[in-house]
Amino acid sequence: GLLKESIQFLSSMFRCRMKQTFIVNTGFTFKMIWSGVKKFLNEDTQKKIQICGDNSPKELFSIANPSQVETQFGGQLPLITQFWYLLE
Image 1 (cartoon, rainbow, N blue to C red):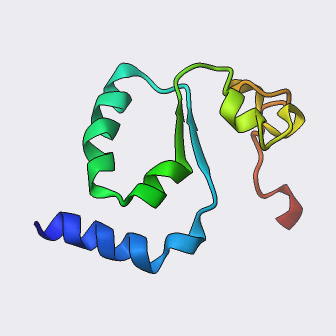
Image 2: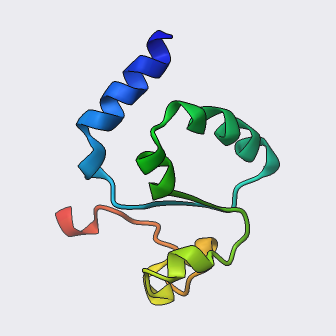
């Protein structure tokens, strides 16, 4: 339908915008929704999205150092609570 065509169009037009996305600490509900949503994405886009259900995302640490990832996502970096400190 129109939704699928729109998603396919956007995926083909902006395919170089995303290298890799990791979704960490997902629950059962998210995985169910994802199994339906990913059918609308082209295969290349699906490969760029990694679902990591636990707090130890081995796939993420294959390309990022744990010292660069916050502890809430299984890394070693303290929780970032202030994002715009450089603008103050």
